[in-house]
Image 1 (tube, rainbow, N blue to C red):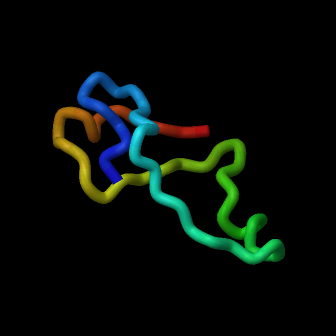
Image 2: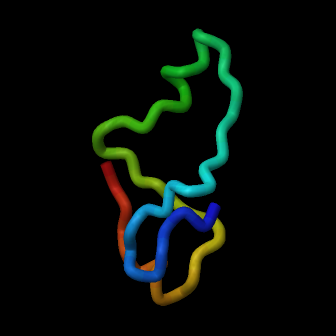
Length: 52
């Protein structure tokens, strides 16, 4: 969480990870057209859409 700055840039200095089995990668990988929704972000930043 909180990996998007107020200027809308990615902050990758404190990333979170999960351990996956080899057969779970396809379930969780971000694909073209996916929309990433954040749960905790400032109101003025949340107006910026993030999509792949």
